[in-house]
Image (cartoon, rainbow, N blue to C red; front, top):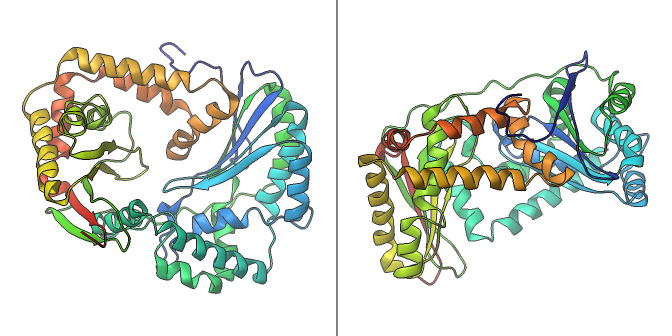
Length: 424
């Protein structure tokens, strides 16, 4: 398509059961990457007491079927030299394999089998539930994981972004009693209308689609979308402190309510650029606090793309507790500057160029193509949003950055947390 940034020709087809397949041939002699993108993450856990199930279910998907048990499946994957894994986040659960092209049909067979015929006993379910709680306890020993958990809980009232991907601790403890619920979770969310296959590499679209139809055509529809509760507008600043039981430098986390991902929302697109301009490695604030004054170990933005209203966040690890207020006020001062005067056109143009070519340079192997597209697929159901977003970036002006700063970075949208270690 004219003006397209995505450098490869994608072939898209939708089966009669709603399963979408995106096949991307590219120069990669003998290599293929295969992603199964489930458009369900921790966002979709709307039932009280059931947070963390999307992540937990990722674990269960490796337990096998009546045709191929978990160990049998693992043996096959090892024998063909494939590598792969899975991950869960707020808006996505993704499963992927990288392998030689001659093994494509075997991977299609294995993936189609577990997505349609997953089988596990209650005992296996309970064993895995215990492992997930162990994972939670290990993760929460990180100050950043603890801070993330507390920030989500502080910033949101009713939306499911209130809990982390791994879930509330009480819900994780209760998972062993959720065997029957787990089967309903599989039945509702692991359906063809809610899943997109992205296959890239040394593949021929026609032959690939023949394989897909052979193994996936009989998969029955049945996706039940969750009834999401929108987050009400925040009416004032929220603040708090987090006590970390171990030793760490203080960590400052400043978050602002953003918007759902939408390339047509010019202010949202501008805000994605603003985060890097204001707080990125080349920003004036980073040069001041990190290089010149040496008051912080780092300062960094996290401005994610989310299916619903996400958080634009700034993190900083401060070297001395007495400098926390100073660093916080420097963040506020920087945002006020972005609200009051447009930035230089050259700075904005340079960032657009870096973003564009950084994205393109990251599309050099099949696994990086499928991995780079996965979140766009989870957010929108396709890959068209890639071209839409980068076209929208090109339209952002200094005045657009200013308007985005004025819209999003207000005290009413703000939540602030400070994490301190045990000996501070």
